[in-house]
Image (cartoon, rainbow, N blue to C red; front, side, top):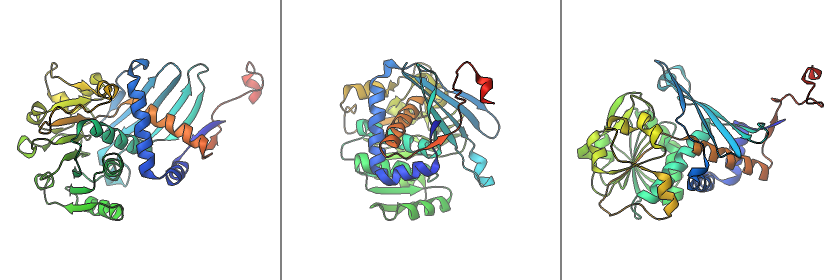
Length: 335
């Protein structure tokens, strides 16, 4: 039997651990794995694009364990009453090739993306950063906000979304979480006075969510919405003004906001930053940019974390997925 952590068991785990502790601990697992970057076989994810969206497979291995995630991104799904993103993941033992965990990762993707965003900001944002502008209040928004609260102490939010109902949904979900929340009438208004700007929009298009005149000195930009070819959020002038950090350069050149830039545009992979163990910010007035597209190593870390925590709290089911004959040479005997 294969260990299975579905939606209900994931909810139980989060309730047992507490979502802010969950995000903080998960960020620690991600940081640990990025610090051993050279141990992993890495490649850009496989992506099958269509007019409606994309379906992707994201594999990675350190030679001991192998993981992959199946994930889609279909921005127009909301018109059908469906999620933009759905996902599941598998963690396997390399020595035998047997899977040891299957887990839902629709929630998991939101959790690991938020943990990664806040972890990057811990190294890139100013130490006194407490106010975050959040442009886009879709499914990622609450997770991002709680991760930044737990890891950086962000307590003030400035919100804007073209869909007012999305902002209202966010306020309902977060009103008891200890934030000072201001609803803004435009993205230009939202970024005023912000220490951190998080852009998390869904539409698959070359958008300019942040233009050059909107970005002041000392800001950290957490750009997580531009995550596939043809989809961007930042004006090239913004990228030219700041220092840009990415997860895996080979993949980010294809999918990130830096797809707009020349091939020799300089970026820094975050594993270099985490390995140093100190802030990468060089001055308080510097602009730093995390051009996030999501990388398979973050999924590996999430699955590793869930495997260990589900074992600790005995919160998992069994999935009858593997044929396990008493005689391994007699598969037909299973019938």
